[in-house]
Image (cartoon, rainbow, N blue to C red; front, top):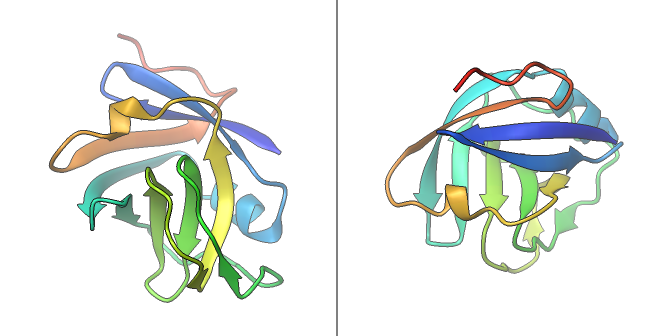
Length: 123
């Protein structure tokens, strides 16, 4: 497992990336600067610079609030803030360690994702 920080404005959220093939490949993309947008009032999504190796992952996943996932058919990152049905092609990458209120704003949200041992941005 890899600890990461998701930086939203002046707030830093902690999360853990799963020790899976997909999780390790996602971690190789870090640090990432992404722009999240709302999708159906259930999740925040962002395009990734490349696809994630999701070989060996289950064919579907049932996301829970706070899950960090990869939607293989579209090649995007999806952070769920509400429960959702089992979805084919959805791969869990990890989850937030606490509340994700900083991500629940309207409109687009710029974020930075980095390994937790990386130096934090100065305030």
